Amino acid sequence: MERCDRGTIIAVACVRLGLEGVEVLLQGVTMRRSGEGKAEVQPPQFRDPRTGAWFPAAILPDSVWQAIALEIGEAVTGRPVELLG
Image (tube, rainbow, N blue to C red; front, side, top):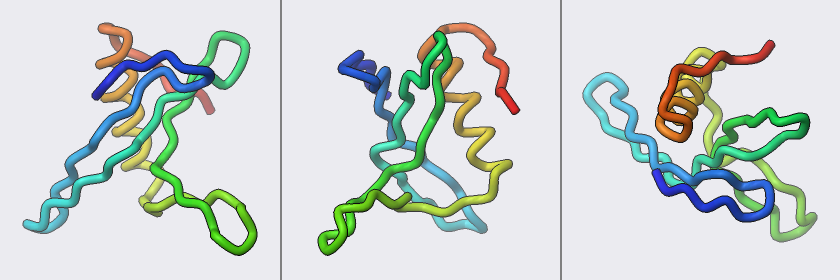
């Protein structure tokens, strides 16, 4: 994980997942400021070359993203974090 504090981006991380013996590396997971002193963790994204719209590069269950968000939040803040919603 690398802290960068540029614009809305607080940090960028690489996340290694083990799925039934297969290791997957997600690069470009970001922690961003979302307003009112809050932050959110977002999956890597890609831009559609035809429309310019941004899409998540990985679709994972909410429970997996919540675990990733907790790990990144704790790494950035140095303390346990709570998820909203």
